Image (cartoon, rainbow, N blue to C red; front, side, top):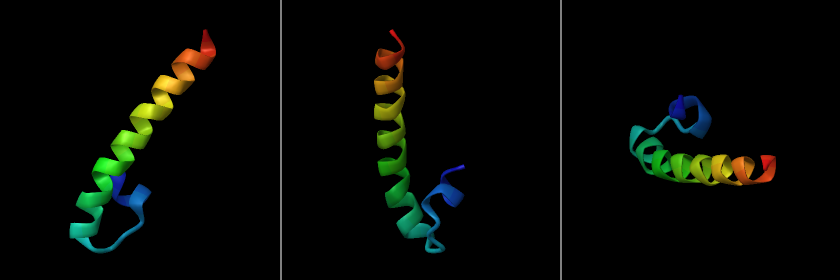
Length: 37
């Protein structure tokens, strides 16, 4: 799921982006949950 999200062919860069993607996704979910209330 993260592989195509990052769009980077280099596995090392994908692993680095993986953390950023999950962190950004987590913040997005929290923001969305609070906005729903």
